[in-house]
Image (cartoon, one colour):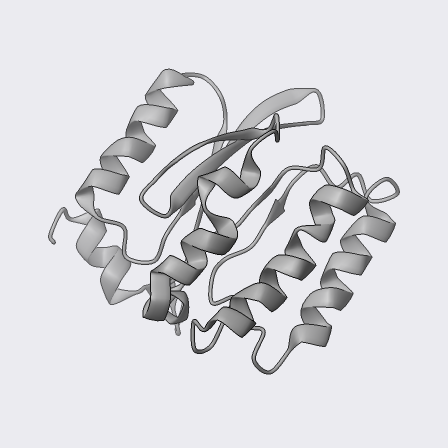
Length: 166
């Protein structure tokens, strides 16, 4: 997260940009907690670094989602990473709430990446299913925050979603 580790995020972005071709990087996925306090400064830092992927590695699909720390001020997240900020990116598929999806190709195949916000509602999960249904046969990767807990078990939030509880 950008309160304590902005240089680490920059280093990761630089590595991706510098190694995109040699490592055959086809997609970049971020998994939330971009910030610690969800304030404007932390989101601006995250945005300035992550959007370098679009400017320094044109055409490289990447996805982002809000983790629990980012929901402290979800308006700041939306202003930085909402659908309008991805306008013109051919790989950006769309969004529901604070979740989104991207399309990308790797190894001669097409894929979907669905980025689910922390603690997605049934509405968001239904939207994700509709994206998968609309792209039947396309291998799909689900990227989310807080799915696996310590001890390699599902987190309590993901277990609730698995069994259909709210």
